[in-house]
Amino acid sequence: AQSVTQLDSQVPVFEEAPVELRCNYSSSVSVYLFWYVQYPNQGLQLLLKYLSGSTLVKGINGFEAEFNKSQTSFHLRKPSVHISDTAEYFCAVRAPNYGGSQGNLIFGKGTKLSVKP
Amino acid sequence: NAGVMQNPRHLVRRRGQEARLRCSPMKGHSHVYWYRQLPEEGLKFMVYLQKENIIDESGMPKERFSAEFPKEGPSILRIQQVVRGDSAAYFCASSPGSGSNEKLFFGSGTQLSVL
Image (cartoon, rainbow over all chains, first blue to last red; front, side, top):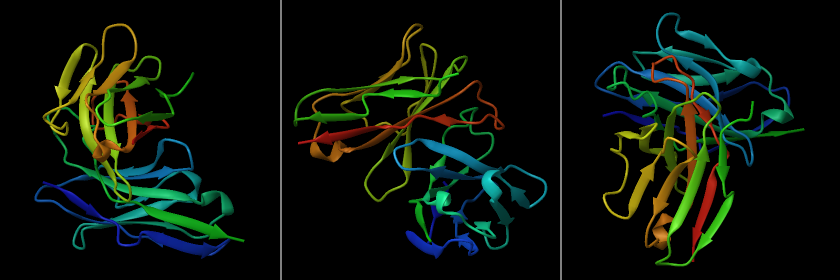
């Protein structure tokens, strides 16, 4: 079984400052890793994903994440945030070869990022 | 191309009533997933359906909950005899296929409130 821990429930930050949203996972097998963003009153959108290959993954809106297998982490970073980045961010994992059901994602509880002017 | 459409946006039910939540996947998508988000919790997988078939219902409560995805029309998540603990946001997602590289597209969710 897999689980995901997002250590920070809320992260306030000033505009143009860098931000890191932390995600740790546990799994007895290798996993795929995802970050989703949820803007107010909207559904989740995929920011980026790690399936294999380079451990540094670049996503949309200037976000990137680094997969660290030894630390079982997949932290999300952005060097300079904008007001429009205010949203809730969810880290998720999935075990590969899950009988074809790629939607069985395990989500963390989310981190609310609020960017202040 | 419209995204994943869920309705109603908000649904209020009294204890013991039935709740029906609808999800129309994106055009061309034949795979639908339902998730539930309890307050202060992450999304929890409930069920995965393809047209007319339930593929994986490992996240569905054993009683009162059912889902369908008929050949024609939207996918329906049905909750019978609702209780206060069913109050949550229910999200639907769709994809064109089931491969590991397939991207999920999420709807805006239905907020169910049980009085």
